[in-house]
Length: 244
Image (cartoon, rainbow, N blue to C red; front, side, top):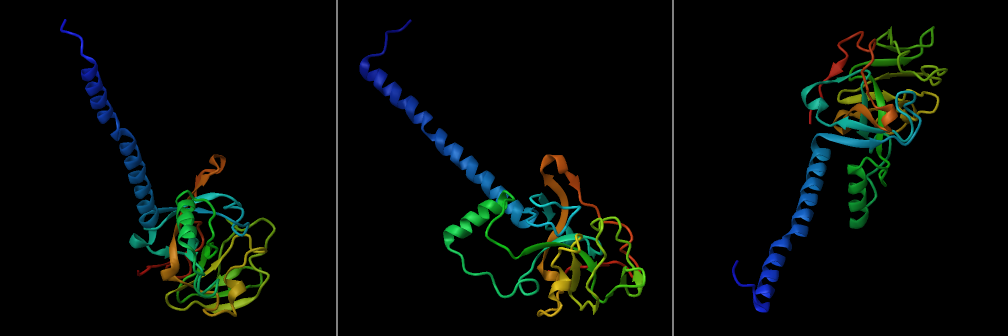
């Protein structure tokens, strides 16, 4: 056994050990920042969480549900009738551009958005695609059904129990590059029907579609995939590509 270290040597050893221990908080913060950046990139490009604020998409989507939206869904596949989509409603469902927000408000909105919590934005909407470009969508036929190009849609898979397909009569032809969308809880949904007299006639530009709702992820008791129903592909090919 060698000689014991002197006081000066012990002081030097302590400083050396401290020098090695000091970077640990830095490494922890670096890991946290990298994880946050990964979440932000994934949310911006691939998958985005959204909060359901209303009852307009019952029974499939309940108020306060958190859903995951596939932002790449329409990069590789077309929009189909029956898809549940999230879209930016500025210029179709809400007028004008979003009011200017302070840098702090923007930072808080980004944080809540990453977590799928409600923020200050109120111009993102979730609805079901009923009419594609070129479709003539009418309500209603003798049996009270919505028709597309003269053929009825089968909506019993998702329509809110007790609701009629629509209590508002309409007859529209969907322009190129736009969609006719409706909520599943028709009696409370302010959808394309509510904006017939607005600029764009209630039609949503394809370029404003954020993505397709893929799953309910919260609460855990309601976890499930959001499937496209059958019966909405007639009478013509029920899909259209989205160009970005």
